[in-house]
Length: 158
Image (cartoon, rainbow, N blue to C red; front, side, top):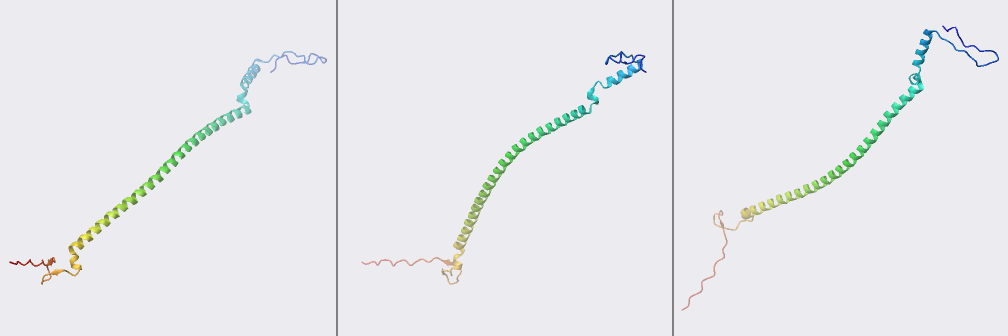
């Protein structure tokens, strides 16, 4: 398939001298097609391909790290807000407990006053029944107030 010309040394004593070689047209086209495929060294170079994959992976990892840092900042902010709300909640609980105890004391005082008033009224109205009575008439059913006798009237002297 090579043309009639080939590389030949010009002589034994002259190293490196060459002649031009002429290729057949089909061989020249095939050679040009093969050279065109390999002109883009990155397409067939495994090191370049691996480097591109590493670069893409590095970009993804950097994006993930930036996202994690952003999430960490947000979590720190939420943690601070949660602590503040927990403190407020504890204060509210203490205040509510104190208020509840005060209201219970007021309620118990009110009930105690009502009970004391009821006992006083009961003793006022029905105390005579328990004390053995007083000056009652012969039938023992009526209640008579004890009125001391009045002093005798002064004597009239003339």
